[in-house]
Amino acid sequence: MQVRIAKSALVGAVGVYLAIVVFNNLTDYGSNFAFVQHVLAMDTTFPGNGGMWRALSAPWIAHAFFASIIVWEAVACAMSLMGAGRMWQRRGEAATVFNHAKQLAIAGLSLNLLQWLIAFIAVGGEWFLMWQSSTWNGSDAAGRMFAVVGITLLFVNAKDEELTSPSDLP
Image (cartoon, rainbow, N blue to C red; front, top):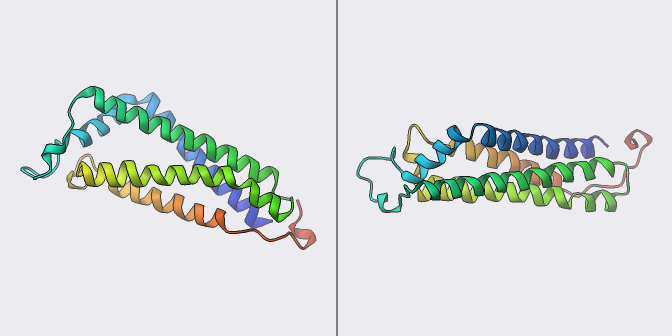
């Protein structure tokens, strides 16, 4: 039972984290938008680098990028929180029922992993050379969150066995 509770709690924690991220992005839009704007403009990368042709400085593009990030985070958040709720509700059920209840959580975690990998590590970090910036560099945070969410996904995805002892029951 402890493993099922831990899986539910970890997925819920990722959902809570994402809820705070979405809240911060909406309530402090300017600060967080500035991050996206500087990454896309590549204005703090190494001087004279050969990738500057990729820079995007039009404000509407930065707003579109940032809006897509917020929506992506919000959808992953909702899926993770609802998935954690489903897992929690079915924690005492048969293994097949509990394993099936994980599907929304797995989808939410996967969606969030894709965001860290595509939006932050690949596009921001490599395409817009965010790693070159000492000021506007979210590469370490993106890698850390990719690891946290990835480990959570691996743990949640592991098949659960039938509950066997009286102490396993809710």
